[in-house]
Image (tube, rainbow, N blue to C red; front, side):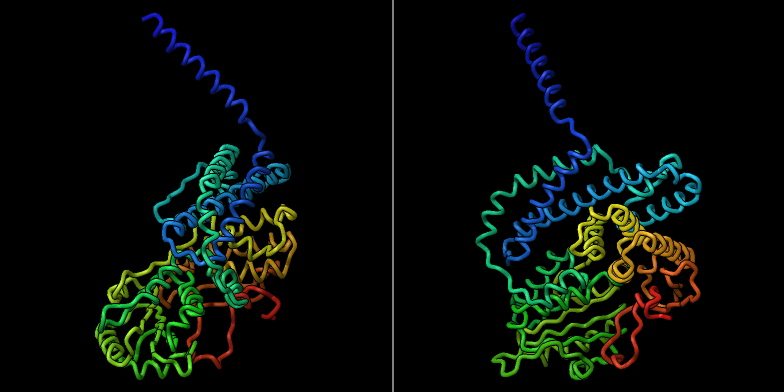
Length: 467
């Protein structure tokens, strides 16, 4: 019995000593952890970039790639947040005079932002934590170390993935496709893209016209995702014609009258088989009787193997599908920050502009996952005025824009599903705006309105074109 007790005690002492030694060995500074994380992000980014250049047909590998991609986005978010936090702490000496009201507003906006990214999240801050929580949440040295360990483990588990990856063929990506991939909201939609490709290229049961509903809020990238898929060479080899109808409703209930109002996006002359892909882009719902007449008319007149895609903000279109509806979700805060950073800084390294990187991170948190603001504010205004003084002014104006419209509408302007909710905007670059605009709706035009002048959101927010 005594020998057993001594053995157990010896084992406990040994484990304790090993734990203390390992704890001492793992103690690192924030700068060391940041340097290690940036090195790991280069490795994970290389794997992701190489995988995106290849046509992966294995669903398990696609899921594994998605996990690594999400972890890479999270790593960039943690690294940039910790760096920005350190910068602000170093410059806090003259920052406390008028902080109280500003931090309350920023905390409220951040609470709203998190709940918009994920409706299950409800964040509450005590005022003592406002300065840190409003800007950076709970990210700190502990989260930084956890991120390093997590990414190290994940990269170590990708060895077999990398070996298998080399056996898959390279994708043929034309310049337009590469441009679309980032600058037209295709960022972060790889799984959704493959879902649409599977639907389009797989045969349907005989006598069935396949219909795929795509549902998502305004400005989430539904039309852009479909346009990207339609540009794929495999889709164009499979279908003889690609037609797109855009409008607020389906006024015509026959395929013949509908096609007269469609834009022809692609047409293959002298095709051996006439398979059509018809894309119908709606803002809201459509009457069920109208849809039935259109569907039966299409089913009779379109050749075997033809397909339809219908996109809308309304959940009700799910009932029209012959397959499970595809729902587009908002990007996670980490993925959105990476996307926003790429739009704003391009090929420049944000670490070379630490103050501007900190302002850009705040901006990404304030605009709350909006693609429209990412392009109008990030890609246009911030890039056109590449200095910290103007960026601070734009950040202040954007925050005021959201506060004003949320107080009037009761929700983020991008979340408005129907007309009748007037939004207000003004020039975000000027110190004191001299013009204010009332917006009834923001959306892409349908082909029938091509001749009308177009005013973009960036035009309203910038003094360059609205003088």
